[in-house]
Amino acid sequence: MVFDVKDIQKQLTAAPIVSPYPHDLAMAIVCDTFRLAGLRPPSRADWEDLERRSKQGALFREQVVMLAYALTSSSLRADTVASLRKNVDTPRLLRGFFLEVEPLTAEMIRSNAFRQEEFLRKWVHAVDGQVKNESPKESAARRNQLDYRTALREMERAEQARKKEADRRAKELQEAAQRATDARGWRE
Image (cartoon, rainbow, N blue to C red):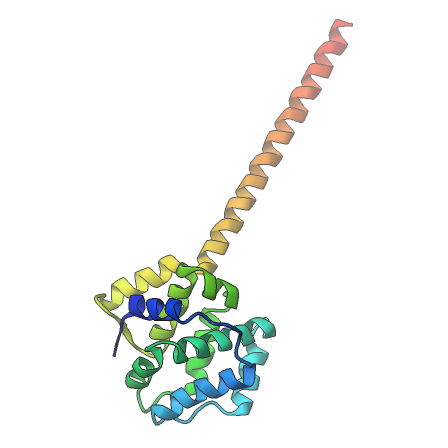
């Protein structure tokens, strides 16, 4: 199934979330999507396992709510139902998806076009869909380009490099001050 990510984003922008869905309702919406595809939805135990495996439980709940919102406020649900194959292991699919989007908060997905695109593209990938007008290779490249975890790692590396450079400069200044003190001592 081909997903028009840009069109889905336009639909989501046109239907802004007024208040977040309760977590139980969000889980039911996701479960209904799998039911519509003729698949066994995740059980309560599957959801509990997903939340337990999540590094941050509150963040996982936000992501479930945002997935439910995207499914109900756009063509994402119909495209997802059409894309799902009959032999899909739903808990495994969801585990992989939530692992991929783990650092994204609901506010980031809601208010940042890049994070929303990342979230949608990772869902399309999770359900073995294809992004409209892109080859699988182009889609993978775009997902990697948008990956917030990569941006975080690059920011951490830059911060470490900045700190290392600041420490080097401080050491040079300290050595220069010591040399000036030593030179002053010889003159006096």
